[in-house]
Image 1 (cartoon, rainbow, N blue to C red):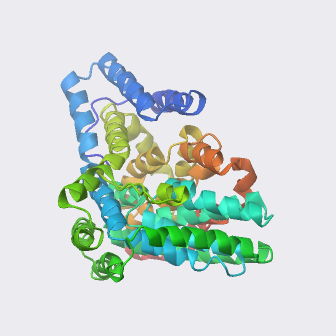
Image 2 (image 1 turned 135 degrees about the vertical axis):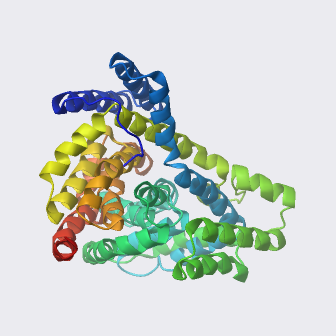
Length: 461
């Protein structure tokens, strides 16, 4: 829980009522008006400030709650800065282009939907961004699927499934870093633990996509080759391109803290890029901040590689700070503590705790349509409940990812849902039944909770 003591004790009914009012305000602005989530969160902060002052809470206490709430996310904020640097340095060192090129090497095989799912997953892990992966490789695969006369719904479902597998499993992902930081779990411990539910969901999804796939065609091979030719023309891919990735893997194996391992990989990638990319040091430092801009003759590859930099993370960082400050006010005004005390009385069994966590994360996604808030609000709400039940924190961080991160693209009015439907040209409700990975993840985490932690809970009680 936020290290903030409530300065007011509302009734349960009052807490629920005001919580619904603030969440409805955020939902209206995001869903109905289509604003960036920053705006309604700031308005919700104003509303909570007014509520606190009306309840005679000193302004200094409200301000302290706002600041203290934001302070709890500083670990994630600094990681987000580093992730922006890592993406840009991996671009100019050729690490991400090499991974993408490797993915396209498999496009000529059979099992089109399964291959789309797998390659999108590989690129998603290397990118760390589901929306970037969808808007680049996803658009290419939609074109390939159209040329093959494949189902656009299944193709889109495979793209979304692969992109959000990458979003969950990549150390570069902002949601993965956010889930681990909010709960207080080491990033790589978190990634290892979510593999318990993520790998089964991946394997089942792969089998389903392979079973549904049409016959192979040469048109997909030609499109993939065009990408590979353009990637080769960047002159970014060298044998040294694999070193930053291998270094990150070694650091992960030896449990080096994420801050250190990401920093080392970025510096090594930058060092190699200085000798292989032909860029001057001044240009390299500019790319660290503004990201890399590709200038090939093939526009889809330019869109694929133009990204990264500290500047690209400022949207996420500002949203995290505002949302955590909003959470701090929910605590100092006593609204979240009142809800927590009610939950703590009712949730005692391991399965009910995990299922309630998943249901809350899904509910926030549906109500608000914002995955960051789904992770942060659910995480802060359930942390003390997991501690009381003697459940490991990594169970909570895993559940947040399984039911928070991957559900957002399945909500038609959500940030991810609106974006993906627009760039792929396939409505959310059309691809939803075929986004197997996203549908399976929360189901598996709920089943897994009862079988794996019921006995563990008994032993620790």
